[in-house]
Image (cartoon, rainbow, N blue to C red; front, side):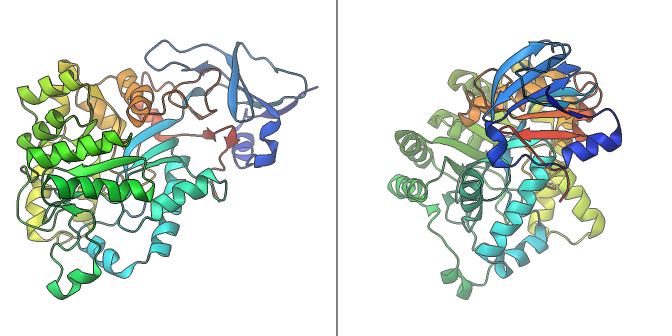
Length: 437
C-alpha cells in the first residue's frame, strides 16, 4: 500500500507543501500526480499524469493517476497544472535596494551580511517557482558562496549559475567608485575594471580564478550608473572581443549588459552569448542575433522597481540616474516587439534586484504585453533559458533522467499567464520546498 499526501483542499495542500523532504529521503520513490502537465514547453500539455521520481530525478511519466512502484510516496496535486521549474536568467540575489538606498547599502553592508541577504532573496525566488537562476554580478562574492552552500546541501535555495564580479571599463557601468569621494577609491575593489584588450583578458581570468560559471560584462553605460555618461557604447571592439575570446577559451559563456545600439552590436559581433536589456536594437542588431545565435534577455520588469521606488520617494534616484530611469520607462518593451517577429531567441530574465525578488513572474505579463504568447513566454523561462545557461540536460523540461524540478499552479498558464504569479507547489531536485518558514 502506497503512502499518499492528498492535496484536495486548501488546508491539506498547504500542510503538504509545508513538509520538506529531508535529504535522506531522496532515495525513496516519489510519485507526483496532477491533472495537467506541461512536460515539454512549446508542445501540448499532457492530461492526468503521474511523474515518478527517484533519488531526485525523474524516472518516468505515466498516463493517468498511478501510484507507481510499491511503497512510493504519492503527492496528489489535484486539478493543478504542473510545469518545469522556471529559470530566471538575470538576477542579483545579494540586494534589492536601488538609487540612494543602494549606495548606502554598498558602503554599509559586509560580505557576511550580503550572503545572508542573498540566501533570503534566494528563498523568495525559489518559492516563486524559479528553481534555477543566473546571478549576473555582485561585489563581494556572496552569491558564489551561496551557490556552493546550496550545492553542498547546507542551505536551501535555487540552483545558481554565477558570474562573480561583473566587468567593465574604468568609469563604466561596473565601476564601483562612481560618485564616491576620491579618498574612498582605494578601499573599493577595482579588479573587475579593464582598459585595453590585454587588461580585459586579465579581468576575465581573475573571475575564472574565483570559480565563476559565466562572465558578465558591460559594453554600454547603465541606467543605474551614477554618472551622466549616457547609455551608449563604452567598450571598444577589441576589448569586447578579448573578453569573449578569453571567456570562451575557458569554457565560459558571456552575458553582456548593453542598452545603446553600438554597444549591443559590438558585443554581438564579438560573439557574445546573450544581450541583457538590449534596449535600442536596429536592423543590424537583429541580423547579428540571428547570425550568431545569441539570446536576448529583455529584463522588462525593471520598470516595476523604478516606479515603486519613485512612488515612495521622488528623490530615490540622483539626477544623473533619474533622467535615464525616465527614458527606460518610456522605451521598455519596444525592443522585444522588434525581436519576436524577427525570430531572435528569447530567454527569460528579470534583473531582480532592480525589481523585487520573489516577484519574478511579473516579467511574464510584460512579455506577453509586448509581443509574446503565454506559450512562448514559458518556453523562454524553461527550455530557452536552460539552453542559454548550459543546463538543458538537467532542467527546463520534465523528462526521464532530468532533475525533478517542477512547480504547480492553479488554472492554465497557457491561457492566462498571470497564473504563474500564484505558485502553490515547488519541488527542486525531488525535494519539496516549504512555502513558508
